[in-house]
Image 1 (cartoon, rainbow, N blue to C red):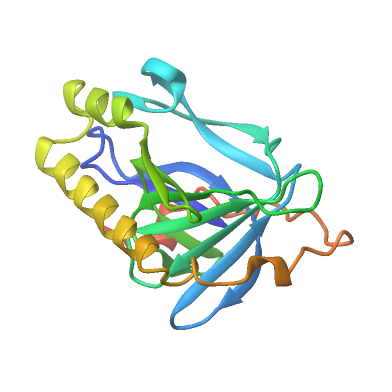
Image 2 (tube, rainbow, N blue to C red):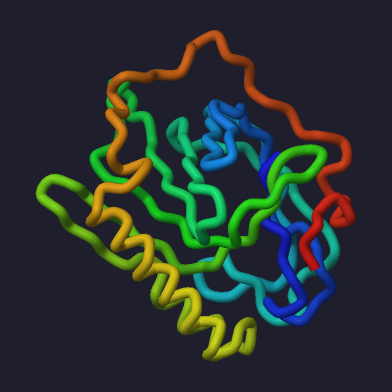
Length: 209
């Protein structure tokens, strides 16, 4: 189970699970974690009062409930360098090739729990193409809205942007996973769709504050 655990510093409510999905673990070492999410995977997403675009919650906007959805995008691999505030996503296209871009999701470094990994999405993201090298920020407007609405402080937004500049340097330097030959691996068509764990709502599973 991968969970985005929302701390009190994001929106003012008590710590809770904002988003959760099960995934297949491809690699888990001291240095990295790699997961795979096939089409049709269940997703639990909190409900309540959301801002423009419907992705970010107003301060105290969570109503205490979650709704189940299904992952309808392309199959996706998420690669997380241990201790870093990001994961790198790449989608498997319909023709069996990997997406030409890398999606860099800024987030709390992953921590292990008895049922998987906890993190927390940090709103801002980047999209990178390696050859020729091109990079662009994504969801800048959502980060600005989160500051204006009082979801996060200016200092927190600055920290998130600093993390984004760090991952951009990692991509430019072709550090892992940008240096991997992704074409050497494809998922097995017979792999099952992973299922939700019964304890996915239990914040006490996390060692985060």
